Image (cartoon, rainbow, N blue to C red; front, side, top):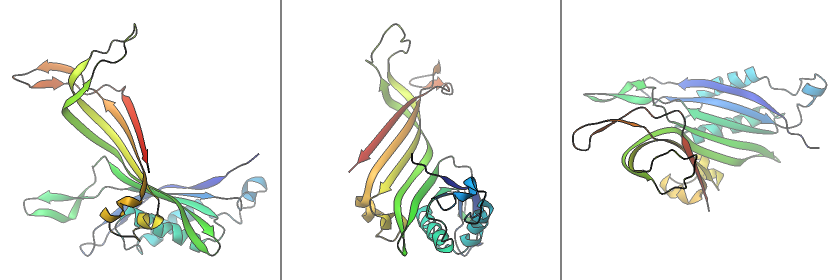
Length: 249
């Protein structure tokens, strides 16, 4: 019988702000700790090898000011290495950071550098697994993505000539609007590209080893016609179709 045990801290949110000297950076951080060194906490009540999850929270807050980068991937790399360097009892960890959206507000004079909008629904996310290899700290797995994208296609989508039986009530639609909720993720074969230690973004595309798309397709019902090609649709129903696609090199 094999067993894997883990514990950690979820949703540690911080805002790194510097007035006008640097753009703001904010994230929601999850930390997972894997290994066997803290097994005695569960079997013997011995917590001597356990880093308290409240300590993890304070560590995130305390080190956020030292991070000078601007990307989630660079931050995840920074925090993961700092954690394993600081706490030798941690064998393997996973650090996940989700973007807290901070989009510059716009006015007649241009983009503001002091007021930021936090209402965007889609967010970037990045996570990496870290492990000890002798005296070194290795990144063993990475994943980045954008989650919660909401798209509206007003024409050019159809669904027709599908299999029908006695249970089918869906009409064939040759031109329909379509609301799409999409998550997109990708993995790098080379961790240096993930962490920002490699070349620029466009030049690192060859290092991406896999891309994954997950979508929800919401079809609204037409409720009224207007002049010419104007139509009115109700909000899509709560039930929806879904599509998944994974591309690997």
